[in-house]
Length: 289
Picture 1 (spheres, rainbow, N blue to C red):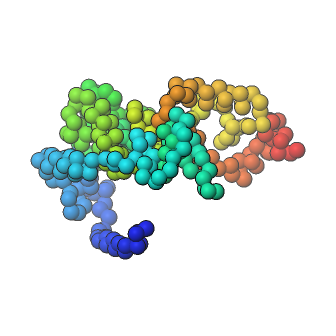
Picture 2: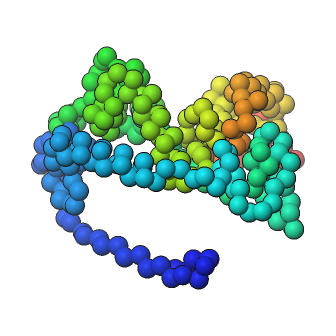
Picture 3: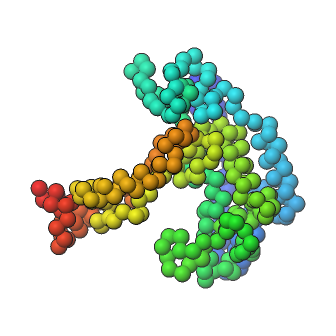
């Protein structure tokens, strides 16, 4: 592809296709570093010493990259030769017919965020009935926060473990590993040149973020809220207000996100269920007209 300066950059990727190993035969299937045991690939970790060397190499690379000096602390561009008066919060501004996102300091920003970060406790995997898949599982006690969870997706009586948590312990130690890993996340976001954090991330002090609002405390009709019901709307307002009130003066909040993907798609089947329901809900009355 061509850059804005007219330079042509060629990217070559080498791909090796391997036969999928049979997890029902190989036990354990996942080694203590979280890798598939039968798989072979360059850079696969084979020992604690090799992992420690990789950590040190990673530290050197991040230190060499440093962080951008041509942006403000909210990710705003300082070298574009224009700015507006900052509002103290993220805002928008129309310039020459084009809308721009503006940082609290008044600089334009093309916001890029890392989603699901720092992900210290996530992703997790169910282990009930298949613990023999794993060469090693995280400690089940003595850590705060725990690397174990229960019924993550509403499944009954299922334990989940965060397998990559073991590598965090190896890197940062059991004492304050969570705080150290969080600081490492902030360091990486800056070194990689991102503006801040994206969806499903935890708000980190001094780092721009995009929190997700959830309203599990508000009743739903079928899969969604009955927005034709004034009582439901009032509960939604109260729930949202309670979630954002603590950050009303936080300049690092880019905005808020609500719901995700299929969960926010109103399907024909859902409408059918509402219309066929014996309950005369406000939504049903609105649909009928």
